[in-house]
Image (cartoon, rainbow, N blue to C red; front, side):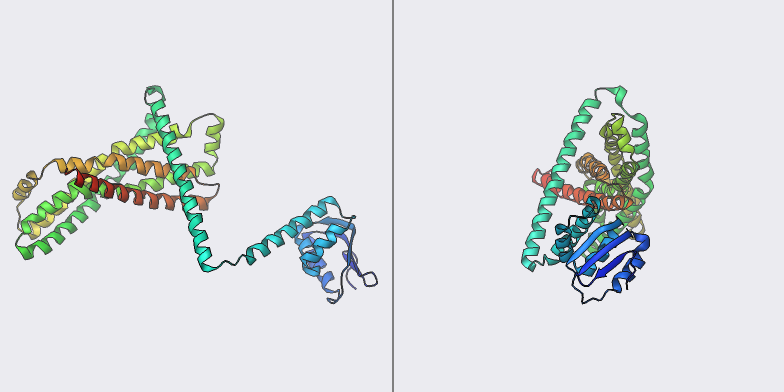
Length: 373
């Protein structure tokens, strides 16, 4: 016979009587009691009048013993059940129903593809609306803050200039120098066959002044600074610092976003100049070492390159800076209260910033080509 302190089966009435405390600490004893009842017995009623306590873990034992559908009918038909216990059984039955519904939703491949495509388009549209709304809020806050110098955050501004700009100069210069050397090697390899190795200097100069200088700096900041902005703001959200700012009626955009945008607006053109200069030095190193071009000759060829190409390249830096800063900050505000969310949105900010920078550069290249600048 099963343990009467928890469960008792009356074969004449085909009734199951539950009693005692059905809680997790008694889980194994209750499970053993139910196993002692012959499986071929039919349960028509359940007596809950002696049931003292109940939780979801032990309620699931009843559902497994009599089946969820039978339990639903028995719970609905009895009047003896404590309202609290009834709520627990109903919560358990809803979980079973949700599980059955999710497992039964077997879609056809084409229907699943169309459904996923629609969900993706809807989600991306929603994210675009959020981005546009955030840009508008940043613009309005900037217009409200700029005429009031007392509200400028100089300490935060200079800190982010140092972190995002000055600290990135060594890696930007090294990367641009190496890529300048690679471009020069490539140009020399191809142009030597045509007896035009001297034009390697023009290739490096035009490439870095117009495109590569600013693009390399922006790509580096998209990976280095956008992720940093997202992680910093995301950590503040996880630590509930943003909630504290909201309680104190402080504007998070004014305190966190505008100093970062202004810092990148100043430092990205500077980094673009450093990148261009380092790329030209890398090309010079290859030209002097491999192409028998003297430093004087290299500089004289550079002097023949119109300076407008440098300004065309540098004009793209402010747009890249704003896009990188806004994406990095927005992804930080999207972080939920978990460390995993910080990692996900940090990765998302880097991917989005890189894509946006390359897309803007392609649009700018087409525009300048059509304008013949």
